[in-house]
Length: 62
Image 1 (tube, helix red, strand yellow):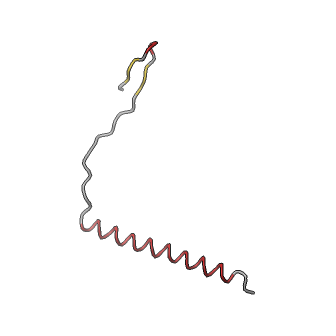
Image 2 (cartoon, rainbow, N blue to C red; image 1 turned 180 degrees about the vertical axis):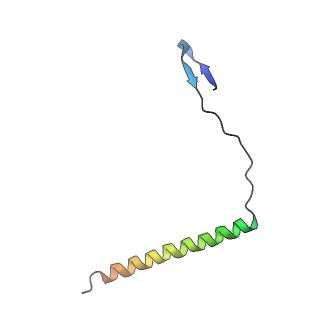
Image 3 (spheres, rainbow, N blue to C red; image 1 turned 45 degrees about the horizontal axis):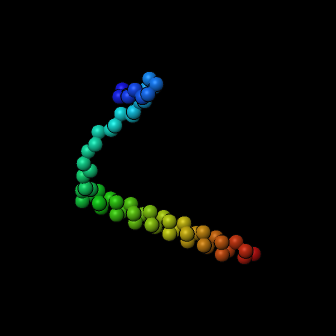
């Protein structure tokens, strides 16, 4: 474990650094999957807003 000795004999430990690697751009199929997931998320959030607006507008109606 890497450490240094400071003044007064105190040891200072450092975390092990992770291996650095170059990120690769997403493939065409990964890009397609990201688009599909994004559209699904937008539809889900839009649906939730629609339900919330409908529920709040009918809450006071008896």
